[in-house]
Image 1 (cartoon, rainbow, N blue to C red):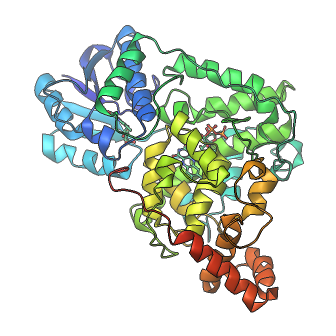
Image 2: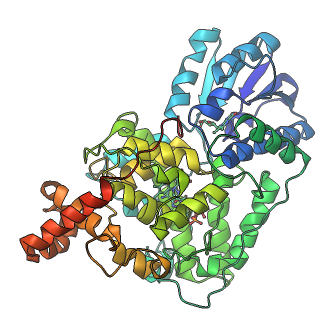
Image 3: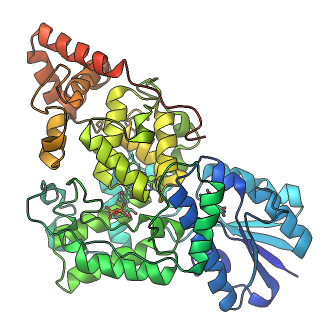
Length: 516
Ligand code: FAD
Ligand code: DLZ
């Protein structure tokens, strides 16, 4: 009697639910490097290297722990290229009596797995992924009990559930649930930015890097200077390093952007978290412990914990609640193709060029770059949300559809019509100028409103509000914006709209084949 346990590339946790309460001697763990996963979008080279390196290290560690591991490499001449094809070959090799697997992160893969029982004529047990703090059904129950899906209320439930930053009598530590108002400081001169912990690739990782360079050399992004953690032990060191060096200032400067500073006080832990090298609970607990020890202030600990047990859990629940329709949602009826400069970085807008450089070099950009620079421009310009979603899925080392899609379609493009965010995250040049040092060195002048030398975001912002007036005018959170628009003379409004069109019309659309 053999039990076959497939472990997917983002399930690299030694305490995975499928591995509990099974005998090692009659179980085979199956890890599969497959072309369908490496190319269903043309992922950033660094992202593929990270996942394959982490998979190979995980397999080595599992073998050392006494498991029988069947590992299929990309260069195996018999490799069928898909999860289903590789499970079929493993079924022939091992004749299992059953298959057991933790639910996958993506709808696409769930549909594949749902077909396995009939296809292989075997019992297939699909287990909840309890690395998440909130189960899929638990989120659905919460959502059904509410008129709207406000993250803040979900987050409070997660604080109560985990007990993180809660007093003994069930109140939020410090008296307030959310200290975001303290977390919007612009960058100051003279700040010291810590470097995240870098890890020198070992032979296993170098072998993967060579394979990726050979097979995926024409994919977007840099592979050089790969330094990400690829094991749970490394990821734990990276977490401890972050808590010590960056977390104390994480809250205050969470929304800041500085030219040449690619991480500021952010953790860069999302790649490790999303692979399963760290659990959300241990990451959040480390921040709470640092607060309890007096080494980080409350606004930092609370702000960071909110991202993990609030936003991260919330978007995962939202994904499974809203799929599959949310993948094609386009409430603002945006039709423009993604501009080519998202791939080349060749734009005079310094904020955009800097965010794209960071993305190309590290498969990383921090949250405000993703939301208020790259996402904001796409939404203001009316780029088709599915083009935007493809780009985000390709370029970030932490991008899996369950977390990328809600952030793109819901949070950044407002393409779900406001189900996730009550107001579009739209900003003009003055927002970028306040929160970054980019505008000083930009070829465009942020103080100019219209014309060829004006920051394009200024006209794009008003053009966006004008285009979507019917939808947004009655939004309580946008009353002030429309009051400002109403106060403008008609010729000023026309000048904004003409300036936006003059900027957008010549933009070159992305060449086909960058993403898919
Ligand atoms: P930190 O700023 O240090 O935050 C700590 C952790 O909180 C992150 O590691 C992450 O796990 C979690 N977190 C913070 N914000 C979010 C959020 N909105 N949703 C989910 N988790 C969050 N995150 C991904 O993990 N994968 C994606 O593909 C992804 N795509 C995004 C696309 C857009 C348009 C936007 C606006 C955000 C996206 N995010 C995504 C969320 C967020 O930007 C990243 O999690 C974060 O930048 C990762 O860097 P970090 O680890 O340094 O984060
Ligand atoms: C993203 C990715 C890539 C690039 N390659 C693989 C792979 O070869 N084998 C694998 O098991 N997983 C890979 N992944 C991650 C999967 O796409 C991910 O596990 C599923 O989408 C479920 O979230």
